[in-house]
Image 1 (cartoon, one colour):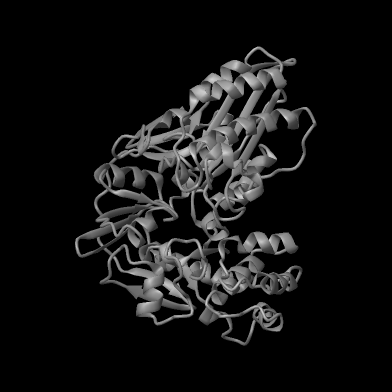
Image 2 (tube, rainbow, N blue to C red):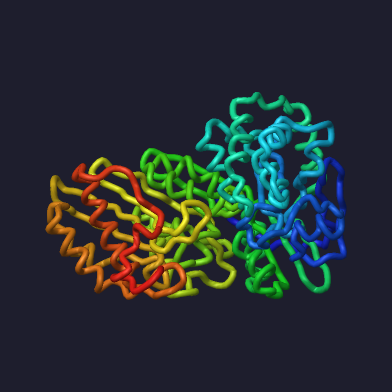
Length: 504
């Protein structure tokens, strides 16, 4: 990364400019925390995009976002309009359900009708936009892929069967060649966006969107009180659910240096603004459990928007990714002004809601080691639902062996403490021993020294501790070849009511 040399002047406020359904829009006079959904419905009167949950869970507000891909083409993704802030659309293209059938019904719309895949109709526009986006990006290949794609869409009439059948009809259908049109739109968006740091201000509230990491460092150093926002999958809820006043936001979603992925023989470097969807393949190359975990990470639209750096920086004790990265021994790059520092990821999490990050300092990138031949890895998510759910317990283990003996153990958990945390006592019980039933039994008992988990709506303290212990036992059984397959969803058959003292 290059180093800044001189502080940048505060840029002048500009209107928000983007393309909506093929037409250029220039917007000013609205709060920077106006959501895209509110703008579409209340200003544009495009009411086909629905508001269901206002938190990115139900998918009724799904729209198609496009932006230049850096190679004279477009990068497309579906997002939840309900938690996207309007200034983030600057230099991007938004397509809603009203635009989809402008030249006649698309193959997907025809399939939805022929399969009777719309019941009350409220969720239908979101499903159509989501499946259409997946078709255009080549994500529809078979029945399972259709189910994965609609993981972030909720049908309240339980009409999933016909919707899946409609999506399946599109799998294998050729995608129209839009190369020339994409190139033209890409150039148009680049011209619309303009140069330098985009700044927007209204009513004393400001929004900055740099595209260069040095500009980001300068802007954040000048405004250390600002809130950083990338995919808005967390910050968006501060507005839609908590009604918080956010007077100053810095958008990092377009900082080119933070969107890099660099693969080396022994390590992977991932920029903080890389989305979870973009990170899935590269992390899956480290171990298949990481790919499977990210397949269950929230819903599809959230994975399209939420970033690796954002998931780390918000410090959630129930984040799914940090325990996996801690188990692997990942390190974090933090930048403040011209200074760049590197620290172990586990050292970033100090206490609940407190991270080792100074004012004006931001998460820049992540260093993830690849597994060595003498290492074994395991990651497992326990939740009440398979898709789009928050973990009750997230476990990730990495063992290093010297022959048949464990020479290093890293057992990391989410949902067990106020931060993602390693089980140090359990680790110590495994060191210098074969990874067998006797060693694991001692480690399971020692885990009670590591954690005193809370009871909440997702699980009781007793359930969490017992589950964490059992996941370590499962890892040992898998390594011994005694168990295959995964049980990852909390259900009535999985609950030990005597242990947890009631429904988790």
